[in-house]
Image (cartoon, rainbow, N blue to C red; front, top):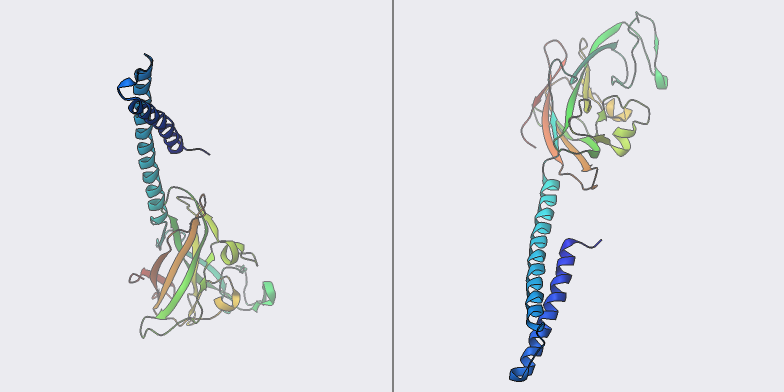
Length: 278
């Protein structure tokens, strides 16, 4: 599609070329040059049009450059934030399930009326005993822009014990989106999630712990063999990275890294506090 800048350039070349041709003809004729009465008025009009189109070209060029700069500045601007919003929000979810339930994660549904009766669970997992209180902690994923992002995922880049800095989990991987609980976990495992501005339900599950058992906690990975690696019940520093792309342009958004400290509360639940910048 022809742009205003290209039209202005074409007009400047056309009328400027005609004006230059007229001036050259007048110069070549010297004192013997006797043009028709309309020649000089027309030449002045051509010069004025050439100047007008040249001005239009400069204005269009500056506007185009400014638009490109704004476009690049937009795509370089912060796109994500990751927060733990605390009590009374979706960042904390408490429920009852057998303490011996494996995995602890929210993919599996507990039967609240269980009382000493063996519990049959999906995928051949079995547990017995009365339900025990569990706590799941989540992080709120926020879109800081005014248009949608796509393919958004949150990855655990590193998990280390605060006490000695030793690795607490051997594998980096993506966390599970809240309610992405089918066996395929399509948004967590494959394509990520669309994230419009001000999405009130954009949370990733972070960690789960039985509140009455002395056992540790698990990170909420969508792959069971990763989620079932139990971490010791001690403060753990987890570095997370949020990635995704602008949905309209498909340009990658700048990734954001944040660190959170997962601790164990006196009541056996989990606490989450911001860590040092990552």
